[in-house]
Length: 128
Image (cartoon, rainbow, N blue to C red; front, side, top):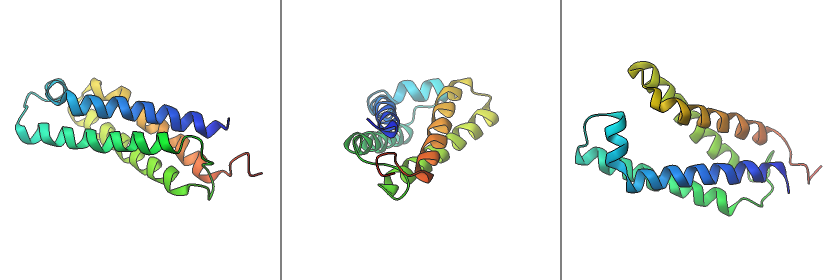
C-alpha cells in the first residue's frame, strides 16, 4: 500500500467525524464556541457539515488511487486548499477570541495541508 493511502484514509475519517458532528450537533458546537444559537447559525453549521461529509466521501473513494505529482492532482490540491484555508481561519479565530477549543482542529488542518502540499509536489512511488 502506498503512503498516500494512509493520508487519504485519515483525512476521510477526520472529515467524516467533523461533518457528522456539525450535521447532527450544531447547537452544541455553537454553544461551545459562541453563546448564540440562532437558526441561521445552526443552518450554516449543518451546511458546513454536509460539505465536510462530501470531502470525506471524496477521499474515501480515492483511497486506493495514485495521488501525487500529476496523478489525481485535483484531489490533492482540493484537500490542500481546504485544509490550509480552514487552518488559517481557525488560527485567526483563536487569536482574536483567545479560544483554546479551536487549537486542536487548527493543528490537524494545518498538518493535513502540509502533507497534501508535499504529496501534490511528489510523484507517487509506484510510477517511478
